[in-house]
Image (cartoon, rainbow, N blue to C red; front, side, top):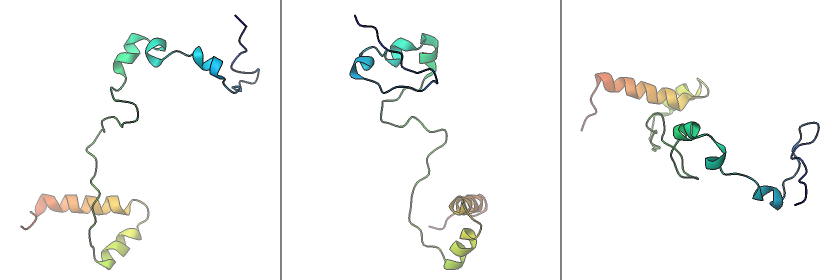
Length: 97
């Protein structure tokens, strides 16, 4: 078996990997200890794991121009601030049917 060249040079730069290099790589299941594998999220590759908080729902809503302009003038995060005002409003007011 021919000797493989190191993956990094003296400066720590990784060289371009070859198909032969990839044959020697281990899967995560083989490389990590069992206790670390036990705490990794259990989701399929290409899919998001569970969120920490419920995801927001994208909707279209019509608001008065002065409302939109006032919140936009506050800078980034204006939509989140509108959401907060509406959430606080629900504490005191029930939506009309």
